[in-house]
Structure formats: structure tokens, C-alpha cells
Length: 247
Length: 347
Ligand SMILES: Nc1ncnc2c1ncn2[C@@H]1O[C@H](COP(=O)(O)OP(=O)(O)O)[C@@H](O)[C@H]1O
Ligand SMILES: [Mg+2]
Image (cartoon, rainbow over all chains, first blue to last red; front, side, top):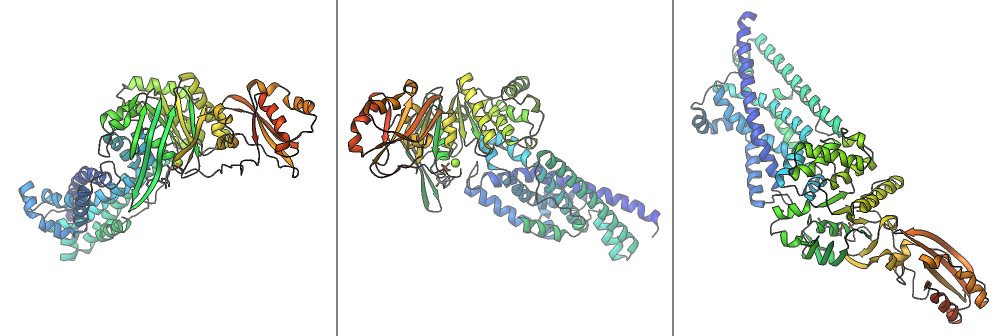
């Protein structure tokens, strides 16, 4: 295979990965942020204490998060067809990716928000602030550096999951690596894919850590969540178990 | 201005019950600085947190500025609109400042005004005015992490005042600060109390705080208020633990068969040469074991520990003479042990 043959394939694969990961990240953040907040707020002693809601959400999140992605993908096929009208292609892959990433991100949000000093919540309450005001002006902004780190971790995990989505014809870099590198023994193609992934993930980690650190520097705090984690996204298992351990 | 009656707070956790407040009746008058002092674990924080209902009292009522807050509380743990509005009229400052690290100093001060729904221009005008008042006009754009402890507490105070409250609650506001900074923060609170007619309820484990700015004080032990009153009332109460702690004098008797007296002078009595009169009138030798003059709650008070020869029974007449002069006499070692207020770390 020559470079001129590989180039259009790789280009398309990059766009497909970006498309899938981009949209599922957006959905994961939009869905996971409120869910994570709810996990904290409804917990015992929380502002919206509700044991039943807390237990239910907690259990759903736990189960969904530990479900192997490939099984989630198959199990969700009916749901995916209902939403996108198809079960193959990039759009179809976004559904299981997002469903898998929402609980993943929700747990990270929960961890970040729990680290916010309860005294700040109390201060806003003492001013007559509502729960919504506490969320908007304390919980989210004070957890922001940590939430950014969590988003980076989620994107990296999604890149890993998206490789598996190739099996339903979603395309992307993982798909190219499997089809050409593994099935047709095009070693060159495989290594290029690996290199692209490595660069993308490293840049992502760098940007995420930089953003989080900049915010931290301003606010004068540091956090153990900010470790440089290159390359892990290629092996989704690593990222997933890592996050489990942290929680 | 602030009245609690029969205030009780019981914490229940894992089947264990802790009675943090055990029937507290507190009365803080308008425009005064009221100090609650007690050891760590006495229930001081629980008390102040019950005043704005951050903590729901188990029983009893809290009235602030004529409004019964306990009636506004409702059932659930969430604060309803009415209670939140009442809270916005009560400022609170904290031991660890509780400033939002994600906001600048100015934005921190604007926070209560956002809650009150004020316009952007209004908010920034008020914030800058308050920064000026607390002497931090140049720090508007700084982040809390860039400030010293004393500066952070000034911001905390400015923030507490943003909604023009009539009442300020302070939970160990100076306990995380060094003595120098403590003094300047207390001075600021005192000035605000005078300038704005602000009623201040403050909690502390440091007697110096009460001594330097309080008009009234209460001593808390095991969830109860065991002594309370204006500082001058307390100093005039024989055997008052608070008075002894506020204004300690030392000195041991030099031998047996001596009478040791603590003489407390207030106001004009302090200026009269009573001791030399006593000595001349009864022709007795008086030794001074210890003495101090101090300003407590803005009042000049002197205390002296003197020793007269002979037992108490032999000195009834001189003691009577001193009392006639309007002096407060406590006979040391007569009514059992000298009470000691142990100072302990804040919680
Ligand atoms: N949220 C809580 N849950 C259980 N016990 C508490 C809680 N807050 C305070 N207490 C207990 O109540 C008592 C009084 O505490 P506190 O009001 O903080 O005292 P102080 O401020 O005088 O140190 C202590 O024994 C403390 O352990
Ligand atoms: Mg306390």
C-alpha cells in the first residue's frame, strides 16, 4: 500500500473519529454533569437529600459504567435504531458511545464536586442563596479545574471506545487499524494509525492539563487528579479501571 | 434584635445522640456587640448556625429583628423563599473566610447582591464602596489566593455587609489569624458596629476578643449559657467566672491568717485613693499582691488583689468600709476554688 492510497483512508478515518468522539463528548458532558451533581445533592446530608433517588441513580450509573462497551453497543441496538433510524455508521455509533460515557463522566463529576469545600456552600446559603445558586456559583465553578481534567479523561476513553465502534461500520482510526493493520497485514498502516492516536491523545492530555493547571494557578490550589497520562486511551481498559480505582 | 428561647439542638448520627444546645435563651439588643465564649465543643457554632437556621433547631424559637425565623423554616431540609429572604438580611463571617476561589475579590462581594437580584452597575458600585470601607480598594481584581488571612477576612466582612444587613454573625472570625491581624479585624468590627449601628453576635474561644469589643457576653458550657449580661454587669457580679477570666489578677497569700481580697473599681471609684484611706483609717498594713487596670467593653476597670493581716473575721469592718466606697469586693479563697476558664483550641 502506498502513501497515496493510505492518505484518503486515514483522512476519512480521522474525521470519523473526531465526529463520533466530538458528539458523544458533548452529550456525555450535557448528560453527565447534571447526573453527577444530582448524585452529590441527593446524597445524605446533601441539599436535595433523597435516599431513593440517590440509590437509583447511583446503581444505574454503576451498572452502566462497568458494562463492557461492546455489549452495551449490541444491547442498545434497538434504542439506536429508534433514535438514528439505523444501527450502522458514525451516527449510530454515537448513541452507545454517549450512553457509555454519560455515567463515566457522571462519576468523575461526582468526585470533583465532592471535593468542593462545604463551607462555601454554607456561605452562599447564609446569604439566602437557593440550591440552584449554590450549584451555579459554587459547585460548578469551584470544581471547574477538576471537571476539565475529567472531561479530558472522558475524551480519551471515548477515543478508545470509538475504535470498537468500527465493528458496526462506524469507521474511524480504530476501524482502519483493525481492517488494514490486522486483517490485511498492512503493518505500515497500523503503525501510522498508532502514531496518529498517540499524538492526538498526548496533545489532548497536554491541552486539558494545561487548562486545568492554569485555572488552578489562579485559584492557588492543586489536585492529585492532574497527572500526565499519555497513551492510555489506546487501551480503553486501562482508563476505565483507572477511573474505577479512583472512585 | 436577636432572641432565642428554649433553643435545643440534638444531633443524631448512627444511633448516637449529641445534645449540642440544651435550652439556650439568648437576648442580643439592637446595636450591641455580643460575645459568646466557651470551650471547644460547648455548642457555640451550633448556636450561631441556629440563628440563621443553617442548622435546624430541634426545638425552641429564634427571632431576628422581630421575625420568627423558626416559623419560616418549613419541614424539609430545604430553605423556602421566605427564610432565604430573611437570611439575606443577616450577614455572616466565617473562621476560614469561605471565599470563592474562582471569583475575584469584587465578584465575591457582589455574590450576595446577585442573590438579591441587583443590577450589574448597582453591584459593582456597592462592592467598590465596601472594599473602600474595609480598606482594600486596590484589591478588587485580585483572587482570594493572592490575599493574606487578614485581607481575606476583610473581604469576608465586606461580603457579609453587601446586602445591608442589620445583624452580623461571626463564627470565630479571628481564630485563624495572628494577634496583630486579630486586633485590626476586631477594630474593624467595632467601627462597623458604631458607624452602621450593626448588631454583632460573635462567637469565640478567646477571652481577649470579648474584652476588646464586646458590650455584652455569655459563657457557654455543655450546650447551656451559664452566665450572661453586659460586661459591666458581669464585672459587678461577685464570683462571676466570666469577670474573673475577663480580668484576672494573680497573687498568692503570703502566709496563713491573712485575708486576700479582690477589689474591683469601676468608673469614678477608680480615681479615688481608697486604699490609702483604708490604711490610714484603720491603721493596717496593706500589701498589694497584684493589680491591673484595663479597658473592658469600653469601660475603664481596675482590679487589685490586696492582703490584709488577720483572718476574715478580723477584717469585717475594713471590708465593710471598702464596700461603702462603692467597690466590689470578692474574698479570695472564701467561696471555694477560684474558677478558671480554660482556654482551648477552637473547633
Ligand atoms: N453536624 C454535626 N453532627 C453531629 N454532631 C455535631 C455536629 N455539629 C456539632 N456536633 C457536636 O455538637 C457539639 C457542639 O459542637 P459545636 O457547636 O461545634 O461547638 P463549638 O463551636 O463550641 O466548638 C460537639 O460535641 C460536636 O461534636
Ligand atoms: Mg465552633
